[in-house]
Image (tube, rainbow, N blue to C red; front, top):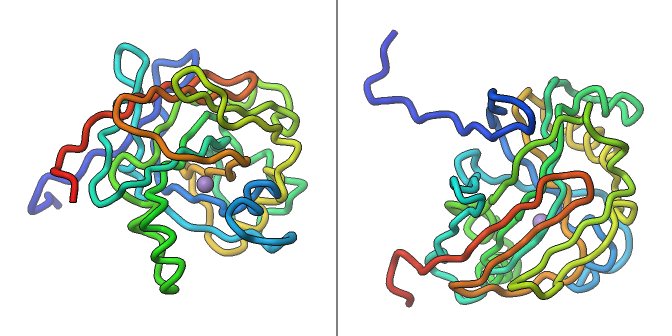
Length: 238
Ligand code: MN
């Protein structure tokens, strides 16, 4: 049956070595999954993983010049970078055992969980949902997906972020509190994972603010580098 309005297009992410795209279904994110980042956010000790989501069309892809242009978002004066390993789910499932988790992974990419930190902090204080701080337009810059079949074990990979050539974040995925397989196990107990789901697995310490004109470079060993330039705000600043 036809639709009464044009249905929105599905977001497709480029895949290394392929002319076909990866279709995005949902975007799940893990909160506070590196100990040193949990500390800088004011949390203490190991806790069960917790999750939030971004809309699928929050994905922001690089243009033909290889750089993603992210407009400085409205309503914030404190836009933060969080560089993260993104897991692309190829095969869905629920209650996936950690030992089986890798069978469900299509590939990996570098992502940025861009955050309106001032709004997130205000929502935290008031016990309200984080959506306005985390799930806004263009809040999920994402690099090319590399199929897992082309990669070694990602559990030991280095992860880093530069802003204007200065190192801001640097760690190893070895330091994830909940590793990739454990994250998939926990997430799939709460939601049935579907092909096309993306999981932002959490950022290491060193998060901080960026400004219009800044150039961000997210790197994870073995994956394609993600470059983002922060543009001007499309709306007048409050
Ligand atoms: Mn994050």
